[in-house]
Length: 221
Image (cartoon, rainbow, N blue to C red; front, top):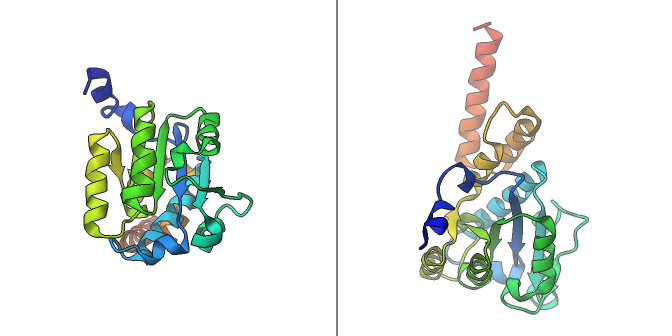
């Protein structure tokens, strides 16, 4: 790895912001969920919908894509409902990054930090992530909004992507980087709603913290 490549993974500029990110969500369709065994499928669905809602809060350009939707099923409703006006790009290419419509849509944003989640990890996430990384994008693979046909398939794909320079990340870590400062009230309130609906145990902890803060405010402390 060159010095320039190594430096791109360190420092403040290595972190995601709403202004430098573009999100691509690949093949969250019934067929893919049916053979998802690396994670509990409902967890992956919860996480990818939460990620999509957060992207909408922060106005992060988001691209939806499916493969052979007439056979593999349309995009899951919970995800499509976040962007009801957007028709997913339906492909025949297994590797999303070989479809010029997808690549051109990403290039049009002018952003170089590419955040990807997909089913399955070992194919539909790894292939475009590795190719895009080789073409100069800083690629972030959302490991808990993606999944493979087995735990081994998922883990080996993550290892392979890391060897190609892709950064693994989880969906709530992305939210933290996009928000960065709770004083940014314009997005904080909406983000709290996303966390409340999709944050699991973290949502419970966050609600408890808000209750404590409200109580302290009420006593004038």
